[in-house]
Image (cartoon, rainbow, N blue to C red):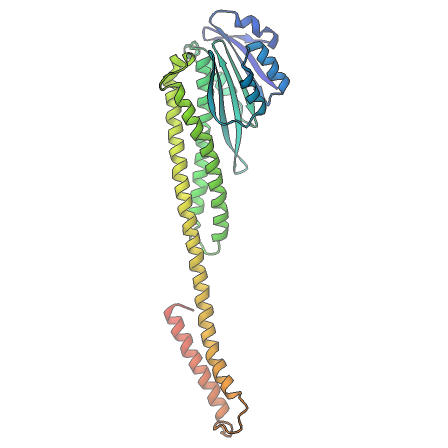
Length: 321
């Protein structure tokens, strides 16, 4: 689905144009066209390929989707894949943004993401001095917006982790804590898989041999790389903290089980004494000294109660009951 198609010249917006007019504006000096698509159909990508002369392999990757974050060069053009991340109903949702960049065009294809980039376009149009840098600055603006949207996700994961840590020592909540911690760890791993490859790819745009298209904006991409390094470090710290929290929860479960086992063992010892006494007096021997004694029954009951009471006192004092 076409979101917008706009032509720019010398850092200023000329007008919204139709797809059929793209080729005319591409011929103008100091002019580039920025097209945005959402969940594009194969026919739309094929039409864009004809207009911008896109490489077959890049178009094929965009059609298939689910690509790893990367930056690929095709002559004087770039094909960039970045993963979008957003919180949807308390869980991390991953989408994809495919960006085709040439000297006089930018084509962005957003897939499986509800967050648009109209704000990015408005920001660029408010900075004509920067927009004069051409399509490379638009590429930076799009990537910077995607990376900046990782921070709210990180903050949400951090808040969830802090909430679970506050419940670790609450009795009866260990099982729920462990389940949520494993879910949280899976989401952090998802974020890690989004950030780590992109961090490596962005490095190609400001370090070493930089594509000629991005030569004038390499310091901007360095800033994006710095943000990615911060997020990657936070993700690593989260994973370590979650692992520690899981171990603490498992230890708390073991401690609770040990407490239960001690209580059961204490009561078993108390009832074992009573069982031993009554088992002895329950034997059917003919000659037993207590059988003919007038006070034998109450004395035996009191003796058993006294011994059991003493054991209960000792177990209670030692913390087993």
